[in-house]
Length: 439
Ligand SMILES: *Cc1c(COP(=O)(O)O)cnc(C)c1O
Image 1 (cartoon, helix red, strand yellow):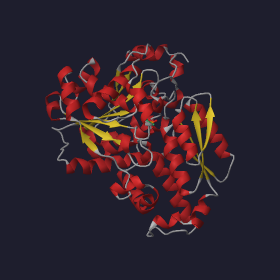
Image 2 (cartoon, helix red, strand yellow):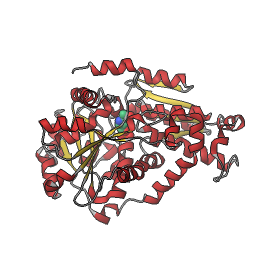
Image 3 (cartoon, helix red, strand yellow):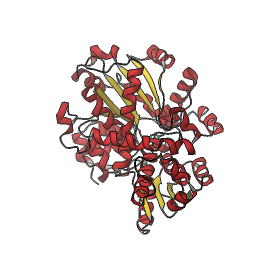
Image 4 (cartoon, protein in one colour):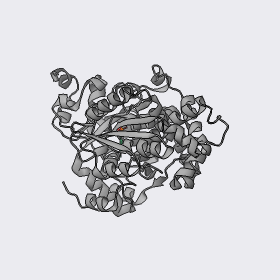
């Protein structure tokens, strides 16, 4: 691919190519109703997904002890991190209140993938169970745990390609409900994730190439079996809606904590991005609810800026980081994606504010910062989000964004959310190694 044209049109792509941390501001961001002109997913679709998840609450409580705290609803705390905030206010121009959305500690799968991944498995289970008269929509779904119903599910196989956490989410949920499950993983997936999956009864297949190769092999194997269902991380609207439900829930958490979001009190959200599905779904929900008052940024590793390249060139899934001479290799295993989702990229075009890139070495610094100030441990991929609030006022382009959107005098009233996307299931010895890692 000849990339010269792109470099001429979008100067920050020089930084991206040179692996320099940078920010890209989306020139196609739209405001008000015009943002939604070409998007055919509605708030009603998100509400329906939320209701479906609630129908499964009794079954989830039966199977997963850690879902009981929220009565079978898989949700994470929104935590004020004022000790960390004070620390960064000392060394940067950061203004506003800082929160951590702890999807790192979601029940069942310990990552943001517990939202979309579990939702898609439940969606399929409900569809099969309704079509075959195992339940009606009014029933208590815990009957699905009976031996005969589990036998029914065991006729079906669910398959997925994953860098790790989606595999954990789909694998654990599918196997627990009684499905057969095959997880196709890239070679850079962490060993402990593969072992955990095998211990739950999932079949793990490994591929030498990256995530994209694992997905295409998985799809091929699944398509060859009429009783197999492939969870398509790159194109699934179902996954996307599962992630979007987060926005309905966070709206309630804001109300409970007296956090106001309006014209004078803007919301900034920073989410690590791999293929784009989970941050994209969350962003979609947030923008549906908070509209122009929400400013959402993705963060990607300098070695895997796939969504940035897809959106900045407009080529979406037709461009890979390798086309830019970038290797796609990063310690952030959850973000090690060379080619973005085109489905997500096109939905993000009118609603995403921008994308930061972060160097791997910073992930470990941020991890220590969070652990030392707040005593919270999250995985390296998850730590990418810290780059957003810390760099917002460092780059000329993001400063211009604040200026252009008349945000400067509102920053003291702003709320900033660092979306912690994973960590709970990381074995303690590996967490300790991460904390001692200096790149
Ligand atoms: C998967 C993942 C992401 C990014 O999600 P995508 O849907 O791939 O964009 C971020 N952080 C962690 C920890 C993840 O597992």
